[in-house]
Length: 356
Image 1 (tube, rainbow, N blue to C red):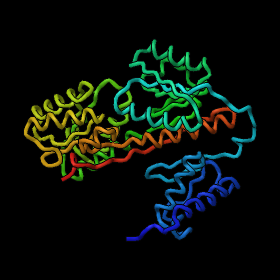
Image 2: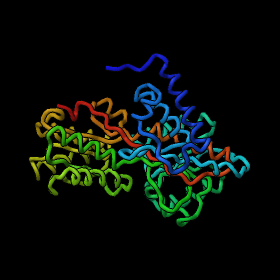
Image 3: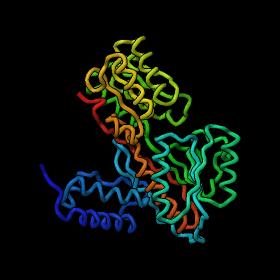
Image 4: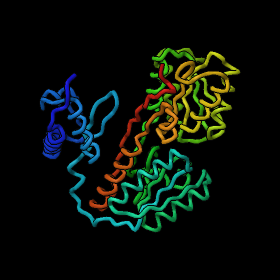
């Protein structure tokens, strides 16, 4: 097995600097595709990991964007810096989320830790899907001149119409078409697709998706679940969608309901780690052992999933927080936020609940 060179941590900085110079000089322009990793690996006579680290730094600084299965696209334009403006200053950052569960608590913790580096104090608001409350929070945050970090799910009715610049606003997790502001999007569909591929590779041919409806943020997971089964040529009835109450109790009841209705279903993709934990308890009550007789995958890669050894889709919240800070600093320096969309691809963390 090849090993990373001893000075790889310095080499990736050199590769990063070289590629950055080529972008700034116009060798690669906005809209151009970067050479594949294997080409860069051979060019710099190093490993995939070193190249990947250099590209990750370019992504973080807003020079390139990586698309799973497609390649690396240059998104930087020299025209962005031609019109100097007065630097932006914010009294604080206001994070507005639809709800607060363990998953969002982890996200908030990551955002707060990185915002301290600017430094900016952080306020947090949660509207629980109440449209009037959501509208009041967004308006108050905008009027105060704060840096607004907003999850679109359940909040879009409180925003100006498409085409209107969302002043001082960065949208996170979900996207909002027609709103020219920085958006850091988690590709939940790809995360669900990876989980479905894993479960199919384990030999399961009937998979249930447990969703705590009607949370709009789970739409990406559902889409990835359905599309991956179709792409693999699975019959329409191989995927079962079951709505359940939020939390572990809802997950336990949903898993037991599915077993009663469809005893052949032994694989469960859950829209949260809490739901997954409940599904595991419900399955054990039915005499099944996850990782042996059945498989369970959650979402969030929270402390709960790590403690209970539950396989989980890691959304990449820390990477999201880093990208938010990079966009905020860029906007503060430039004097205005740019219309940019950054995609983060989740990773599946396989643990005992879905291994054989």
